Structures are given as structure tokens and as C-alpha cells.
Image 1 (cartoon, rainbow, N blue to C red):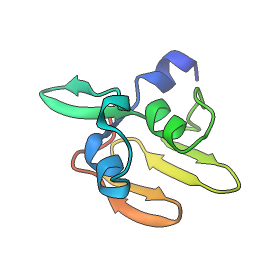
Image 2 (cartoon, helix red, strand yellow):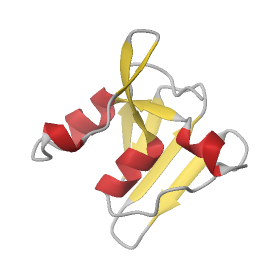
Image 3 (tube, rainbow, N blue to C red):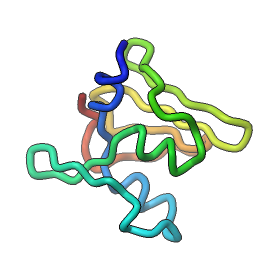
Length: 94
């Protein structure tokens, strides 16, 4: 898949805010989708020091470094952040 598709995949703001409270709010790039606040997967991966522009493999997107791992599934509210199951406010959308 192309980077354009990757950039268009969004994750709810609640996931990042619930996981990390020390991140400056001004650094999040909030995107409105159907009246809801979302973050791009690229924005979240950059926060965790991961490369941006990783293309999903089917419905699943996985990013991993030595210190961090992220896993998202298109259409699902469930996400794995550093091995911990997290529930998004809204499902992942493209």
C-alpha cells in the first residue's frame, strides 16, 4: 500500500492521551473525522520514536522497535501498545 493510504489511517486521540500524560498537547496533530478527534498512525509512531510511513499489511498495521511496539487493526477499537491491550474511543478508520 502507498504512503497516502498509511497517512489516511487514523487512531483516536484517547489512546495516546490515556497512555502518556507528559507529552505536550501542542505536538499532537489532531484530525477531525465525522466530528471526532483522531491522530494519524504516523503521528503516534513518531511520538514513540518509530519510523513514519509504514504501510499496513492487509487490515493490520504493526510497528516495532527495541523499546516500543504498536499494533492496530482497521475497523477495530482494540490496539496493542507496548504489549498492553488498549481500547480506543472509536474504531480505526482509513
